[in-house]
Amino acid sequence: MSTTQPIRTKEDLSKLEHYFDGNSYLERRNYLLIIMGLNTALRVTDMLKLRWSMVYDFKCRRQKTHIELTEQKTGKKTRIAMNNTLKEALNNWMALKKPSKNDFIFESSRGKNAIDRHQAYRIIRSAADACGLPDHISCHSLRKTFGYQAWRKGIPPALLMNIFNHSSFRITSRYLCIDQDDKDDVFRQMEL
Image (cartoon, rainbow, N blue to C red; front, side, top):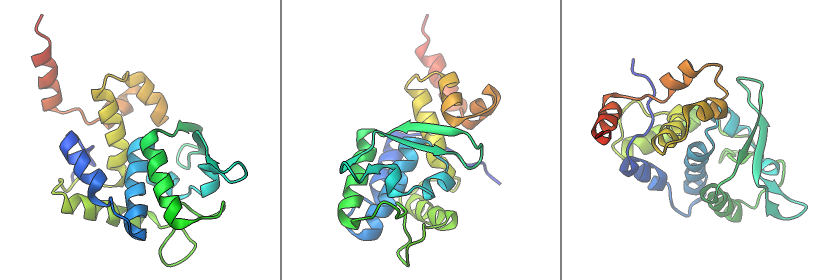
């Protein structure tokens, strides 16, 4: 059994991000699922519980600046700033959906309930397959990709540990899935 991996290359990341970049109901919802996973580092179970009132202020008619929630797995409160990529994806979905404040963001096409994690897995896995990504890409890959790409950009691992709400640096280190290619890049760059 292989371990869930992050998406390592910018090319593969771009393919996955734009696979569902269309105008239909399901394409926009599925696109937002991928964009939100990549840009918030939330676990899929936490993402699927999000309601529109958590990202949009209906009274003032504008997006909120942060997503605030209590993580299901850890029971810890987290506050995540929404970047422009996520805000744009939310705007596009909202324009098509016309939601009310209590609607789930990732509503099932069959009713008012949120899609479940198995459906989220099928969505991400079908996109990964169509994009020619490896078999070890899953919902959790979106969270790991956030961490891996942040680490590649120079974000300190201790900060990532805090973002992920990990209890030890050892967990975060394993989570980043640093492989031999990453180590080779460090040695090639360190010409002292």
